[in-house]
Amino acid sequence: MSSLAASSAPSVRGGPFGLLDRWLHAMPHPPCVVEIAAHHVAAARWSSGQSHLESFAVEDLPSGAVMPSPVDANVPQPEALKSALRRLFNRVPHHGGPVAMLLPDPVVRVFILPFETLPRRADDALPLLRWRLKKSVPFDVDETVVSWMRQQGRDSKFEVMTAVARQRIVREYEQVIEELGTNAKVVLGSTLASLPLLEERGSTLFVRLSGRTVTTVIVRGSNLCVYRSSDISSDLAPQAMLDEIFPAIAYYQDTWGESVDRGRLAGFGSRDEVFRSALSGELHVPVGPLAESSEAFRLDSSAKDLINQDLDALVGWMLNAG
Image 1 (tube, rainbow, N blue to C red):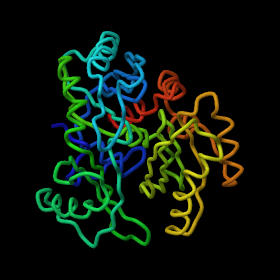
Image 2: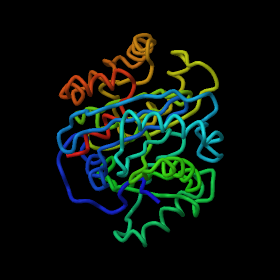
Image 3: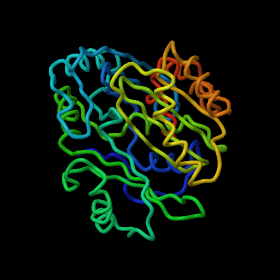
Image 4: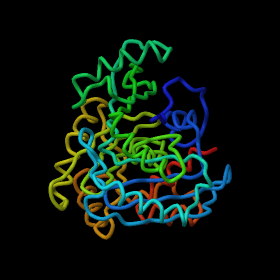
């Protein structure tokens, strides 16, 4: 079983998005990364230690091949997914080595849990985390993969950023790529992989649309303050987007006593400008595409092109490579 993230406390390192950067740095970092979404699969291969894009590809999936859910079976058409991934790996070879696998956001639930203290030993911390998660997840916590990272919240209060997924659902995806001659060394939610593209200065609201899933994130400095992921029942309209993110904004303002400094959007395609205008008008802060963040600005043109194609998770993963 691959890991969602490092569960031990890694040593402090510099780099984009501070704390999450250290979290991801603690994991193995294969140069080939694969994202599986509801309607497509995508892959990129980065040169080791050079942040240079060697190859990338995207393949569409037939409707219903992947149905993201935290509870129910996700891959009702494994042969269709396998066929798309086979074509993908013909264009972005994994050379028999392991890959990083990025899964749809509904699969990996993220919680920010307040604690007085948490044991350093993983064997001691895991039962306590599962006990805390018991009322928050819609499945048996004893059947989960759980990973976590410590952070300081408001007024230096101790928090634990926790990622949890149902084990049998993760295995659905793992088994498909194993039949194609590789394995997932690391499994991560797509939006979590994108976060290193956000500014570490001040506070940023990040709204990411993938298929029918809207994920709302607020980061402040190196802290993950809010993470909320929801499915929508129809095509998203600007007002529906505002209604969806309002609870996250209200929670952040109540908890931190301040408004966000900026907004970033990803996944809205040709409707990006309409949604940016609506969000900026509501929050009265500058709102721009993720490709215009200060972290994205430092990247070469090939990486920026991927972000502009809504393949930001592949680029965010690369940023933690070295």
